[in-house]
Image (cartoon, rainbow, N blue to C red):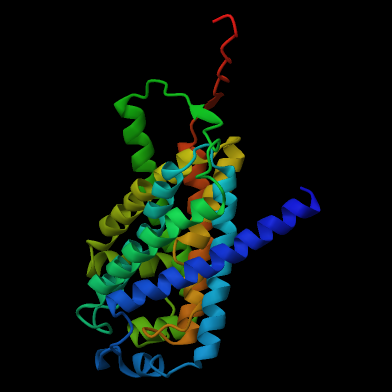
Amino acid sequence: MGLWKTLVLGLKVIALTVVLTVSFIIGTMISGIGQQAPTAAGGAAAAASTAQPDPATVMLLMLLASLVQAVVVAYLVMEARWGGWKIAGALFLVFLNTFLQARIETAVYLRRQVPANLGSQMLVTGLVTALLFAPLAVMIMGRFRRGAVETARAERPHVSWGEWVGKVAAVAVVFVAIYYLCGYYIAWQSPAVRLYYTHSTELKTFWGNLAGIWSSTPWMMPLQSGRGLLWLVMTLPAVWMLGGSRRRVAFGTALMYAALGGSAMLILPNPLMPPPVAHAHLAETTVSSLLFGVFVGWLMKRREVAVPAEKPLSKAA
């Protein structure tokens, strides 16, 4: 890539960063999210998390989080073999999935610490952010221009129901495995995390911890399987839009899951949990999203064939 193209790409990434930040701010203003403090049910941990951070620091961290996401969005759009509204639709679903997953997490783990209407506010924020940012991102990257057409199309060989069921089941199982392995060996190793969720710093073994989850909340693992399937449904169009080899698709999907799946937003001050807990979850979700993204991208990659060029009409015709 030449110096001029590199400069132009850098300017596009900066524009994406600003547009994403503004879109998110507009979404929060429309939804009213963040205007209510966590309830007292969370105890000292929740109270500690309500300390008001410096506005300049918040804005700087928000721009940093948006920059990480903007870099990944730019990469995904450049790697896309689609164009125009197809890319915008795929990005819309990816960003909306971020807020859907966050909504599920707060409903399951933080229901005592959050206001009753936070769930609907999160969904409105996500919907507005995705609606504003997705088409503008495609426009900034120049994929709405005339001539920005598909460079390849996926073959559509016959896939039996058995194959689809096998792939879907594999996604559900692998998501649960990665979720609990990373949750225990990364986040749960932090005494602050254990104290926040259980009011105790006791560290059980992995299997002992898993047995406790199964006995106290047997619905949790099926729920997490459902979350894995939601990831698949909401991001599959974005996976299929990526061109290149299976390795490149797996790499792109891993970046997409890690940066656009909510991990980057944990950089921001979190009104629901103290910084040590949020930072532990940042490390956990980054690693788990990368691993899950590699698996989904590798599993769901479709073969491609070149789109035949249109033959110009001869003058005699």
